[in-house]
Image 1 (cartoon, one colour):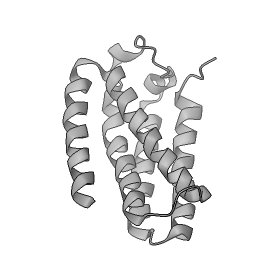
Image 2 (cartoon, helix red, strand yellow; image 1 turned 60 degrees about the vertical axis):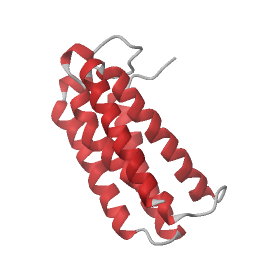
Image 3 (cartoon, helix red, strand yellow; image 1 turned 90 degrees about the vertical axis):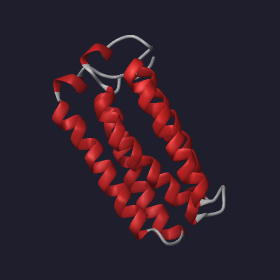
Image 4 (spheres, one colour; image 1 turned 120 degrees about the horizontal axis):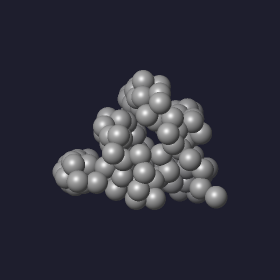
Length: 145
């Protein structure tokens, strides 16, 4: 299972690197889509809709760490518009705050990777980490109508 996670991550890194150079909006959408998929898996475990799986929990937090590392660089000035982006102007008005959110996400996901051992510890950590996601979306994302 760990080899599969590592292989998928390596492929995602390569694809993201190429996409980021040519189309940062598409690259960040792809990262967010994958993070959404991982969050859905985590929510299912936290709600008891799916059995707790430590390897899946670790993969979820690894995904958050990876996303947090890549996202700040995917917002060059030429990507403020186009590609049906929902990026709010505040990203470019407050780049330090925007980047700090990803540092916080990464730090909390790393702590979760170290501390999660069972369902109860997962629920606690997962809830805290995903609050970071919501906070960023509230401040730095334009809500779709």
